[in-house]
Length: 190
Image (cartoon, rainbow, N blue to C red; front, top):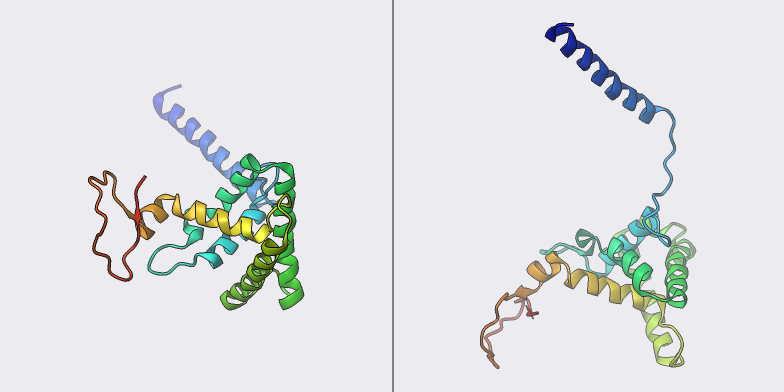
């Protein structure tokens, strides 16, 4: 076999491999939600991203969805919450969709921005009332956990720390009074 025949044989082999892969992807495969971890799938993360984006929307700085807040929440709930708190969070995630269907006859992801905001405002009022009357040992309200994880994920991300806050890597000396104009980002110093 000469060089020209070897190159054409390899090209045929590689071309068949590429075509074969395309044929397999086109044959009626139905996609199911990808499992992110033991507790959350990709649809759950999309819902968490939308909830987080409604809490911290995109303005002149990126919103919570840009920081992948949904993935962050899924990881934190899986790795850092005990079983009781995980159950409260997961039941609450399902409840957000149930409330959307009850109030607007559509799932949360299908709602427009104003409807999402109104629904989450309603849930926030519920969680505040719950927090005031709950017993000390009772778990927190699921929406409170979602808000706290959204804020934690956003402001500890690169986007939140560098675009929403003013970051000074080496802060230097302590200045008790610094000039601050309304609208300036607050300082983040480690």
